[in-house]
Image 1 (cartoon, rainbow, N blue to C red):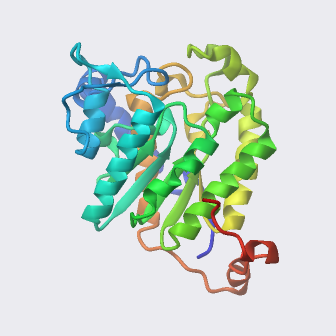
Image 2: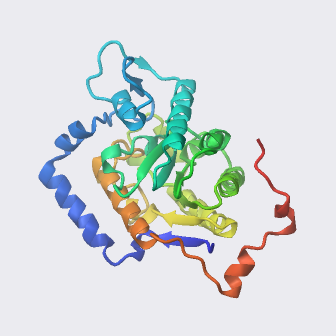
Length: 310
């Protein structure tokens, strides 16, 4: 399988689709969308609450109840271990049902808060994302997916690590490990690593703004360029969303964000469109047969003995 790098603007009809989404938001209304999706966008990064008597075996219904607006007093805050337990159960349930078209969303709060109602409808989605997650945490729980048979796995991870002070080399190596592990366990799946999104910079209102500003958007852009090269080398696909979400000066478009870091409803509509464009172009996994592509599939000697460290 030949690896690929895809900028968001590759499709000629993307801008028209984005425009349609803007009209959709204007007609329906931001407030109506928020209410219908049960998403409280005020604090997506720090607090995720759960209705105790909900059936969390109902994967996404449970997740939506967990973040439901107006939850009763019986709710409690989820710990990281609570989320691990739920994601494991969700993955186990998916493995039992074996949907024909399974897509996985793996990442941090930006992916976790992707409203189920807005995910592209052509597949069954398994959201394996946790608020505050970093590359090591995601790598450690990839085992949850071992018994599943996904067609596509979409990964977006890294911003929390940068905010916490991780250097670029460590982050990129951890990203490489994630890609290699997924490809090893799921050789028939298309692994799609999405770029780290820009942030709002000095205009951000997120509670960790001071630390966020220390991670410049120029650094993120350069990091994405290096990440794309790594992903391509390892045989996966890189989906570049940075410019789609960024302004001319490289900051996160304010109309797409709640706080300069997390996305609002319109932001998720834009992301949805990008995923639909991507999927439209990749309904059938392409396999190049030219010599260059074949050579790229031959691993280096040091890679031959590589296996996931579990």
